[in-house]
Length: 462
Image (spheres, helix red, strand yellow):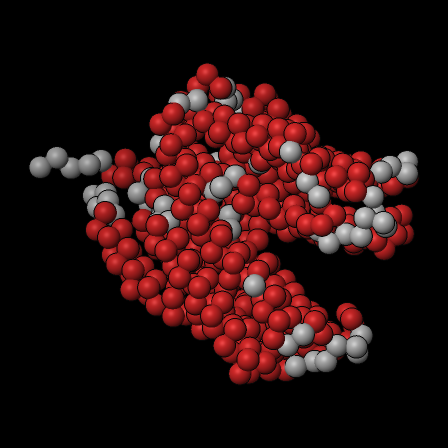
């Protein structure tokens, strides 16, 4: 029998421990940087709202807010390909396959660049012929059709240009450099605000305000790509000549599943206000929106620190570090559940005072609504922490299937429970639909997935 050298075993264990600490360190830094970036983004909104309202007037400000709210479409514009790229980058980096990594990035840029060109073409050739005032419900006597058409064309160009600009962020996240991506995002948000204020000071048109606010962040991200690939990591520099069809197809396959998840989750959540308005009226929408946004903040804080674990899980999986995966999953779920429960409990206790300080006494306070929102927030945050584990292991197909079932069940349950229980039926329906259609399947599948990982766990060195 050949005995391994004790010194070699100690060296391997030390190396594994060092990688474990490095994953946690990078995830923590990414969380801190993401929190800072989000704070700057929120500050930019608070600063820009009164400035643009005063400059544009009520009617044109409403158009501005409608257009800028459509930037949420950027999360879907790459059809999930960016998420697929992030997993591919992490896998290649862990295996030290630099050529493959560069090929995946090149393929992603080629695909998304082509998509961006289609968007620009539509903005220049098709958008000017659309009656945007009718689609957006704008009075053409108060906001001219030409001004609105120009603003929408610029918006579509900015949205299209922002699609390939996000590739650099996915690469940095995949390399567990989330803190670098977040710091550049912080700069992008700040630059966008400054550009908007400059445009207002120059009495620019609505189209120029859109360009200043939306194009500037994309320019900053493009600059970050030049710095990253030009000076920091030139060995990972992409090139169109390195793009391969097989890499593009693989990214599209995995991206399609991520896209299905995004659509399912968006459909489940985006229907809240529509259902409330149809059944209970506009005043109930305002009441629910205030409560839900408070609890959304607690969930967001949790996500800022849990989301960086996605590439960390992927790295550990590629290196067969299954012990790290299991221990990290256990403590991340525990911390998320307990931390979110503590935060939501404080909101429930201080709910009436918080609502009064924020929006005054105009809106009624419902303790039952706050308690239901608190329970749903704990479930949602814990589910997000579990999703980072599943994403990192590439377990996407089941997530896509459950996301679609969850969306259908949640919408049906919300309509029924809102008619029966009123506004409190919305969070109860979401929580119930999630527990039945998502949590139960995961309770069945995840322990078996962990068991398979334990079987694959390399034997300890002797």
